[in-house]
Figure (cartoon, one colour):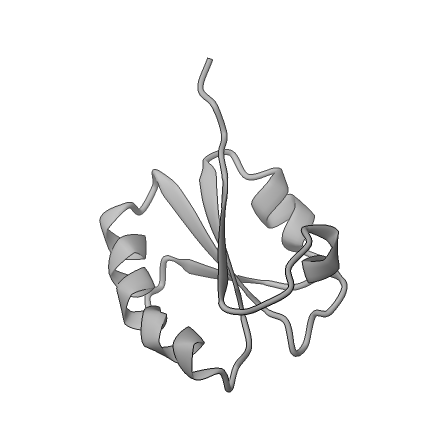
Length: 87
């Protein structure tokens, strides 16, 4: 697992993702869902390649059930980009 992936919870999602100083890729997953496991190595590579330019945050929806409904998440895995525009 990449040291560049940030693990977030319902409590830390807003400050870590929505208020991040860089763009953020939010990954919502279920721990035992096979497709979630399949994309993990790819996201590890992306996290390393874009370190410092793109933050990758990981939220386990089995343990954090308050955040997904706020964004209309109905299935997993879900990847969402939270863009920070540079002005």
